[in-house]
Structure formats: structure tokens, C-alpha cells
Image 1 (tube, rainbow, N blue to C red):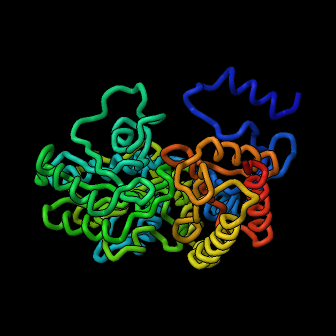
Image 2 (cartoon, one colour):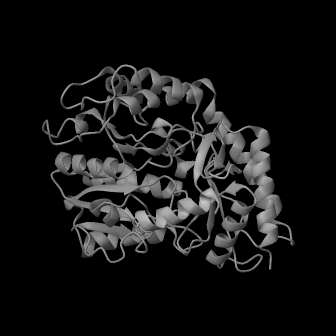
Length: 428
């Protein structure tokens, strides 16, 4: 029995089936944009730990910072005895905040925690309780964030009712047949039929939907939401858990829009593979909660904060904002050329800003009917050939590319070659 097969058997026996794993192989080691499994086979990584590894696996600068922190202390709980890495990281993020004026930051462990605490802050700051999100959104798996998430299966199925006063608007997109005007009419109807605007604490939106299919929010929608929020005293929350830290070619995805948010949950690539999340917000909002109302035992781990400080250095020193643009352009050019061919499975034109790139598998060439089965087949064939891919989207039809921004040109080209081969293998 192979080592991978042995581990799969042990996993099945020991681990809850409620947590899924995209591949049947097990990691043994990784460097930058490459992973070796338990049987010694090498893979090009186009998943990046679900957008966690913008600076790659085990970046030397991150590992050096973590080792230095391990030699000092690993945990005191910031609420018991605070430490400088937490404060320094908050200072760095405050200076990068995607809005004018003073900012403050606090840290947690997971993206869902960041979103939940952004909502808590918004509720205290406004004295209101309702929150508006969007269909197709993904904000987490806790009870509150599950309720905000705009997809039933698998995230809400059989878990009972969501918390009260969470509402959804249709997310605009040509594939869904929803225009920005349709979304704004739905918002007007929501205000008229279900919840008055003076009961709404926040509107939360991903600048580019992640699990929903890498759908960028239209500029017209963002500007309209900012206008509505300003008119009614509602806070705008930009969920940057997946779009933050250079993935889109900007430090934050919201920077592609001529609007500023009020609160910004962050996580994933913030700490280069170490568990860390946070909320960056306008200083006046961040101070509305009484001491003790926010926090968590492991929130802002000193080890993770040290890693995050190194991540910010790497993004600046290695020009990863520009590198994201170059990687994304190269991937989109290659995918557009593939989409025009007749010897591969039908795919859509690629989309997404920077290196947050995706395309859809289609039932027919030139059509728009999604093909989730084909996407599953492509992911499987790619893995067999040595490429780790992830799918997403309403019907599982979207192939998303989240290669580390530190990838070499050679490894990037190798991964695209494997992807092209997988698309050829599943051609009808």
C-alpha cells in the first residue's frame, strides 16, 4: 500500500467526514509553488492553500521571522500580557488601510472570526442589527457567517435556521442574468418590504467573490452601495479575506474601486500560512466596543504576527503587486488562446483582476451553460498530471487559479501546460 493510500485510510477512520479534502494525496513538504506528496511525487500548486500562500510555501523571510519569534515566546494571550509584534503589525496595516483618515486594527485567528467581529463592531457603532449580504457570497462557516454566506449546499444544509436579520441581494453578473439595476431594485424592495434602512448596520461584500466563482463586483454597484450607505448611515464592510495582500494586483481588492469601506476583515495570505485574521477599520468605529467585548485566546498569535510582518516586507521588497499583474496577464493570455481552440473542452473567457483568475467549464463551445462535471474532471486529470487545482462557483463549474505570486516563470508555464493538457483530455 502506498503512503498516500495508507493515510487516506487512516483519515477516513479518524477524521469527521464533515470536513472535505479536495485531493486524495497528502503533503509531505513544500517550497514556493511546489508540493511533494507522501509518496514523493511533485506537484505544481495552483491552489495556494485556498489563497493563503501569496508569498509561497515556506518563504525564507517568513520562516526566519517565525524561528526568531519561537526563540522568544509563543503565547501569552494579548489580553493577559501584550507584545510588540501585535502592535507593530497593527501599525503597519493601519498605514495601508484602504481609506483616508486614522485607522485601528485588532486580530483574531480565522476569516470567519474577522467577519463576525466586523459585524459586531458595526452593530455597536450604529445601534442597529440587520446586515445585508449577497447571493454567491462566502463569509465563513460559523452560525453568523454561514447565514451571511449566499449558498445553501454545502454550507447551510441541515444546520437549521440562520441568525435573524440577515438579508441577501442578488449579485449582478451576465451569467446569472442579473444587472446592477436589478440588484439596486432588489435593495429598494428589501427596504420597502422587509427591513427599513435605519435598521441596517452594514452591507458586506467581497470585491471579488471567491467561492461564488471569482466574480468581480461591478464598479457601478460599489459606487451605488457607498452612496446608499452614506445616505442611510449604514457601514460598508469590504470582505478582503481572499482578495487581500496583493492577490488582485492591489494590496486590497477594494482599491480597484473609487470608494472607501468602513471596515475591512482580512485573513488568509496575511500571515503566509500561519493562522491570523483581523479587522482594519476607521479609528472612531474601532473604539466603540467596551474593553473585553472583542478578542480571543489565540487572536493575534505572536508567531503569526511575526510571520505577517515578514509577509508585508516580502510584498514590498519583491514587488508582488506588480508581479500579480504580470502573472494574471500571462494566465489570461494563455487561457484566451486555449478558449479559441476546438481540441479542448469548452471554456469561457478568463476573468478576475491581478492574479485572481478563473474560467468556467461550459456544456458547449460558444454557449454559457455551466458544466460542473467537466470542471471536476479537469481538476482530477490535472492532479494526475501533477497540478493542484480548485473548482468553485454555483454549479462547481469554475476553475480558479491561485498560484503563489512568488512562482517562477518556468513553474508557472509548467502549470499552464498541465492545465492545457487536462482540458484537452476531457474534450468531448
